[in-house]
Amino acid sequence: MSFTPDQIVTMTEILVILMGIGITYAVYYGSDKAELPGEATLPDPMGVDDTTPTSEGRTL
Image (cartoon, rainbow, N blue to C red; front, side, top):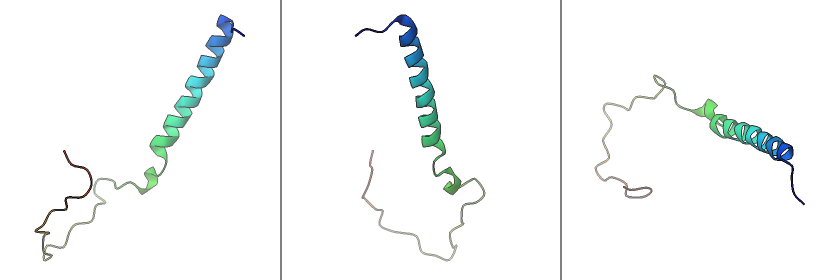
């Protein structure tokens, strides 16, 4: 079974459109919960800073 050049172009167009929809969904999913500039809570100035940094998670 082989595809004609027209079929290959059509399938490519459909796949590119679907990938664009998928990428758009991935970018905007949950973006309503994003912290925007100016909306960040300010830490309590009387609060004590953490003296021991956390070593869990990603590191360079």
